[in-house]
Image 1: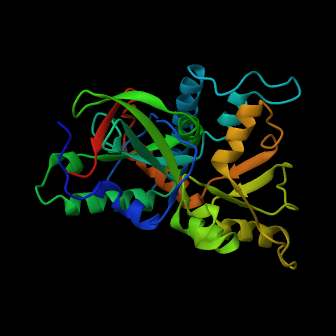
Image 2: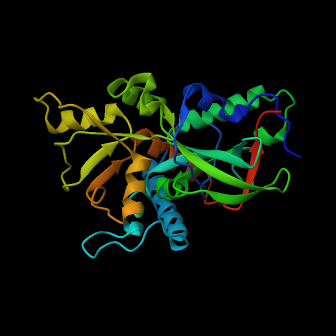
Image 3: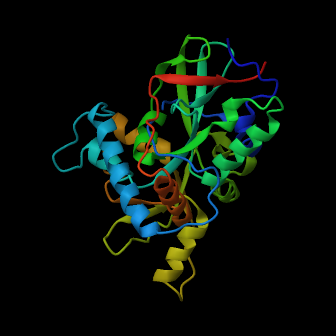
Length: 309
């Protein structure tokens, strides 16, 4: 029987606070596999060692997933394949809340579908889990035993581009499941300020803003895209300390890649470098290190439903 929760999915209460009034973005989505969680990380040690181990894990995770799925047809000979395009995202972490068996918590719509979330910000994921534990007056083990796990963006993006059927562990029913990638609050607010305000497209749940300057590239020739405005401006100042920046451009991560896969044309992403947030990478490295190699698999086939009574 579906867990009777009188508050609407408090594990994602912060998410709904951040996205209150969000419209539903047309595109709907899917799920992952991961790393381990050490509740809240206050200090980061041996980041270089942990980062190397995290990269090894991220690469193997993405490769395993890509071997069993295909989002597009083979690319033209002069373009990278869909797998090569996605593998460039393997070192960028997202965060997901799961139970001890790696089964993700998803919000039940009351009928036959559920939605899960991959957070680009560890702080948002950690606050959501903390809030759920505080709101759970009955002291349920559901939330006390929940974990935050690391999911490569290469995998999360694939799963955000499709829907799948999964078994609900609560009641054994088959659910159609979707997933959203959730940007940081800073990213959303900056995008709304620059483009459209509260009624613009960046107020739609499922949008992931990428910030860039059309005239800036990295030393390797790639065109950088950032999840927040601050990192973009830092890079501009590093490259052009005496110049004022041009107007900031914004694109949507999910729509960008969806279009490429749909058209089998990767020219728009071939030269891009999606830049991870430094602090997020450090947290992911620390989480991976704390797992001591015990990396639970994100469960592709099951879901734990939460929702209103």
